[in-house]
Length: 385
Image 1 (cartoon, rainbow, N blue to C red):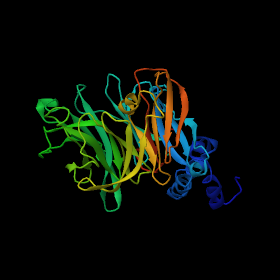
Image 2: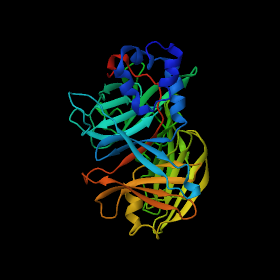
Image 3: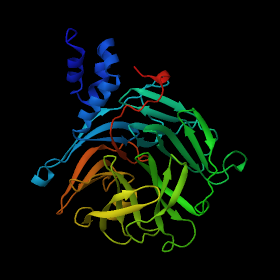
Image 4: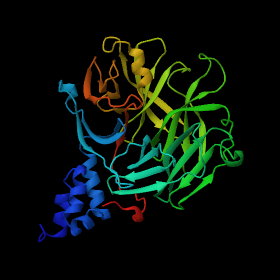
């Protein structure tokens, strides 16, 4: 192929799956250089996103790429969930990720919250082969939450990380919000003064959509039937929290509300009313940090499918949905907590369990998020080979 025109080589290599890129870059210097050009990445990512849905899964503290295909589900063809490769990060002369505590996805970038003594963050673009270590400016392990997004100005994207801590935990009680800016490679404290401060509790992991971040939150005061739940958005361009966004139901403390991701187009919501066996999936038809509207996508009675269904709702941490096919995939464990399982739930009573392997750690529950590769740049000084 060394004698072929550059355009033809680019066309051929762009047809290869995402998982082949490491092999392509190791083949020769010319291919390595070609695979990192803007024209090739744009063409290859376009080919990749037209294929099956890609999902990043962290299970037993290992990070893997999963391919999911729902194309034949309405013709009674079971969907496929295929392990397409383990994502390997090379750092500290090691190839494992045993210290990963949380995982987030935004714009093709993965944010790992490390559970080591240095309390570091790792940002990684698997497609470009770049990563960067980030050290928070203050220490707090009582409670903290992270989210990643980007500032949208002049058709460009400037990525940022938001850190939320317990009130009055930072140095000199400076407040609970800190922001890391990739462009300046620095942290700053955000002076967020809104009626929300001191009045809500952020629950669960954030979900990124179009550069903004969203959490399920609840009121601090009141009993189980009085603490309402709602959605809170954070605008990374304006660097401020939005108002309370309503959920589809009057949702209270004992109700289970879990955010699910689609293909970076919408946010889905798994809703379980406390004391019932009903599960509903709602999808946003419009969402910004200031406005929201919902449409019901699916309603299922879980009683025929799962014994002791209450644990199923309470221990599912992250899910993903294919809105076009009306299918939701819940990643959790089986009833005996010995196997990792994907529960595929669809219309007309469709239900299937896919065994993902033996549980090797009772401490970690599976995490999953949809993944779309991107050429988002981190830092050339942290290039992986």
